[in-house]
Length: 168
Image: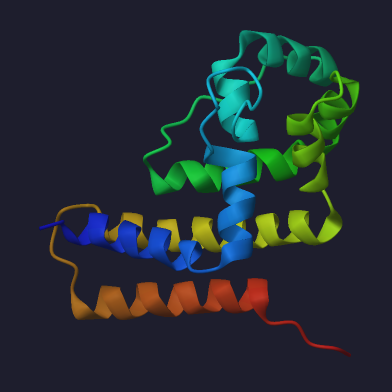
């Protein structure tokens, strides 16, 4: 049986996996495995993490070395990688453009369309907000009803600020 934190995290993982567009995008940009034969480097973040050559090329484009280490089994990693990709999209785009043309780099570049980047950014925001809520439960102490209510209200407000759009 999972503890409350792990079951909450698992519920977040399952909720994202229900949308095929998000599932495909996260796989392509974050956590797909490589083919092992060199024809497919896997997800972008995983490829950067596993390839000193890509790390060096990205450092050249960005003008600095950036750590792309992550633990693929953790939900928070998805949020961190999605945020890093959005914040560095210009540099990543330049890296992919400068690479030798391959089916892998072309597939990754296709994911850099505005609608896909918006979906990734919203997924990162949703994940970050939800993880802050889950981490409040992670302290291992009693979580009184008043604190729980306040945390839920804060989460609802934050998600409302992110996702409620009004036309003026």
